[in-house]
Structure formats: C-alpha cells, structure tokens
Length: 185
Image (cartoon, rainbow, N blue to C red; front, side, top):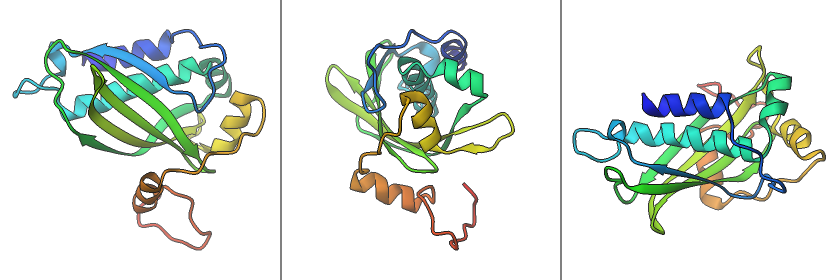
C-alpha cells in the first residue's frame, strides 16, 4: 500500500526534469526498505519489487520532462511484459538504488532495464517492455513518443541479445504482418 501511495505521489507531483537528460541516460531512484515492503520472511516481497520499479519509471519520465507532454496528449505508460532475476535480498531499513535505463525501442515498445543495487552490489534486475496508450486505449508508436520528447527522430540502439530474445519469447517484439498471436500484446 505504501508503494502505491508513493507511485501516486510521483505521478501527481513529479520531480523536476533533469536538464540535458536524454532517453539513453540512466535515471536513479533512491529508496529505503520500509516495514510494509516485507513479507513473512522479513525481506522485500517479490511483488513489491514491481511496485518499486513503477515508482522508478515514473521518476525516469519526470527526469526526461515527459509529464507535461504526456498530460497534454493524454498518454499513459503501461507495462506489457516484465521479468525479474533476484540475486540478494533487501532487508528491513536498508537503503538501495534503482537505476532505470531505456535499452531501446521499436514501433511497439520501449525496452527498459531496472537494476537494484545496495552499496554497489547487484540485488535484482528487471527487464520491462512498456508502451504508451492514449485516453481511448490506442497504442502510441514508440517512434512518435521519441519524436515528441526529443524534438526529432532518434534511432534506437540495438537491443542486447538477451533482451531481444526475451522480447520475442514474450511476444512483444515486432511481428511479421501475417504472424498471429494467441495473446494480443
């Protein structure tokens, strides 16, 4: 519940844009593990990691100065797919950072990496496929989002091999026009 309130706060009152921030620059969110983040084993619950990642993505949008553009156009960011790998547990009251980076994009999605670190040690890594929808629920091309945010067309870097393979496996990567999906993403 506390992270949902934090997410709402970061959406209603985003932090200030970082001058010079580009789509490919990392965005860092600092947090501390709170009592409501814990499960019965006294480490951060796996579902809480996803809520923390939501907060960090809101901060990234704020760092890029995208909130005014998104509000004006009626865009909302949504997650289409995500995966996590956990290495070390986050314990009560520990400070940690989430570094969010856009790895690349295609006409359908943005692909992001979100890395949790504590005192320089890797704790968890998440990969997210995200897109923007308008008020009617229509998908906005990532190319259009990039053009509106950056003021020009910017080519996407090539996705890391593991992320490209994951995107294909999750059926969020671009498809051939004739390719049918059992689950429309």
